[in-house]
Length: 254
Ligand SMILES: [Zn+2]
Image (cartoon, rainbow, N blue to C red; front, side, top):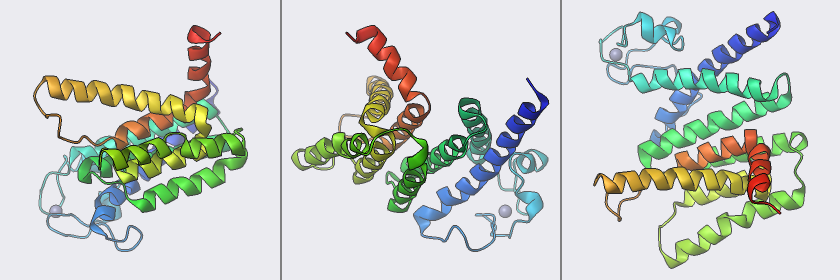
């Protein structure tokens, strides 16, 4: 590999970890209604203001031994794992698209999906503001994703409308946030790739729900957060939807 590419991979990891650090702020503040843009970061336990040295992604956690510098309360390891994930996702987007606008677009898309997934796991809701942010990325990405307006419009309704109708028949069987997210992702990916993403989401969520029921960790009436599965499916569909579709048609097609 050429040195410039090694540098760019490292660069994407560092940028990814930094953006994920901001995503952590969004995950904590948005459900509490605290502005994500204003105010310095502070320790949630002792409320001591954190300085730049305490906020270096991944490295601060290691140098502080996983504890707040001021009150010695443990810093959630999830925050740091998310920063590592952000770095790896940055590298993955660069691996897929190289030096191209799609690297930035796919990375922005996946980081919003990470925020949505974590907030859905924490609170069982998907904030409208994040769905609108996905919509903004969809509009920006329009010239770079070669899918017709018709396919996108069909994508907007293809899954969201049946789910919306199902919600009338069986109240609250799907979260409203899930349906809005699926609609916007359909607009971004077009109906064919949306279906690839939904297939991945349903298969993985189904396996996990089956495992939980068999191990008696939940019963049939419990809800599981579906958002993270939708997000995973949609990100895979954006990066590799076309490859998966061709693979599927190669096996089952005419
Ligand atoms: Zn503290």
